[in-house]
Length: 257
Image 1 (cartoon, helix red, strand yellow):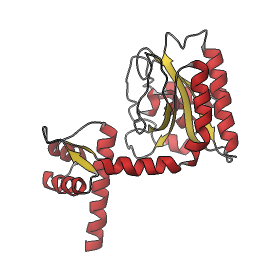
Image 2 (image 1 turned 90 degrees about the vertical axis):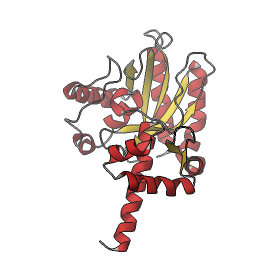
Image 3 (image 1 turned 180 degrees about the vertical axis):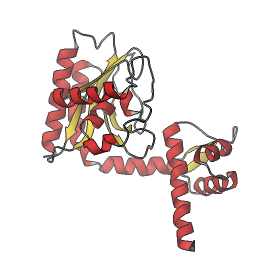
């Protein structure tokens, strides 16, 4: 192996460490990271020390564990501020949130997660309601458990979804779809109906309605959702919410075409 190959491999390993921390969403120690990635503890320690020195990770002085650093936040915000989709969609997301006084999110597909696709939240409008669901920008969940995730997968090319058929579908609540025949049928309905519903599949007590954002080639680029307590997003409210989510998603999509 040449010196150049070794350098490239070290970059890959460093990225694997950062993605693991992102996917886990919590502080992790050297031993746990090494075990999860199948690397030597000494290698992980060198990677973390280097990343720490450049503020890409930070070490908790009390626990000795590591978490993502402020440099990544700075890079992420630079991208977010320049992201055309976010700028285009912002007034529409705000209007949707204000119409129903519920939280609104926009997410894209996180293709870096190997086990099963996840969503990555890129924008949100927070409500003033006492009971609300407002996960932070940059967070995510597996696609089979959320309205936006199901929407993103339903409108993806068939070959992308086929590569995951047969892999375990993570269960987050008793309502999460974990059987592939049922999940594929759900994908078909979402494509036909033009929206997706998460009925307490991500979290008990939470209901979400999501719609797809499509570009001029009719390719999925993002999904938006309105979510709130099931007690508020009930059968009486659902028809109006579905119609407005679809209208908002279509309006944003038209601006990309």
